[in-house]
Amino acid sequence: MMSTEYMHSLKRDAERKSKREHITPFILLPCHKDGRVLPRIPFIGERTWKRDWRVADLNKLLPDITPEDRCDLRESNIFFVDSSGWGDGNELALTMSAFFDLAPFGFGYAIVEAGQFQVCVRAFIPPVTLRVPGVNYDVAEDA
Image 1 (cartoon, rainbow, N blue to C red):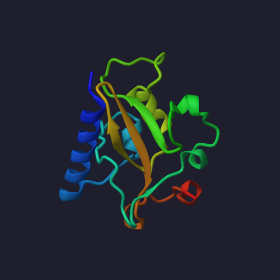
Image 2: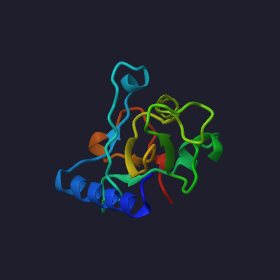
Image 3: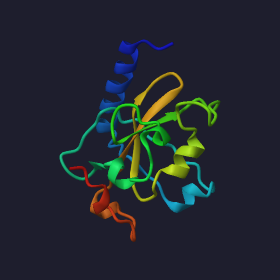
Image 4: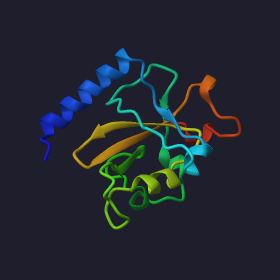
């Protein structure tokens, strides 16, 4: 089992690497939902931007989804997802396929915290130049 100190060091390292290598959240597109392309969600730690990428409010974006369905244990903008590949629908963490079924396309997603078998994935509103036509981003604005 990973210690809390080790998980925090992983998060700090990921944040530094994402800044150094200009890593940004992954934008989910319709082709990712049909299984043709398997995306890799980047690990950015607690990186923030002064502008461009903004945190999406999942309570506004997914108003009909309960926190239990989202497996959201801490915040309104976190998905708790199994990263081992061994999870099933009876566990607290969403499987990757359940996450991709639930996550709205057109938004950015990045891992902000990682444990041994699960990750916390945050939803982001992409900058204007990367937005997908037809997606209503105003509904997910964080207050």
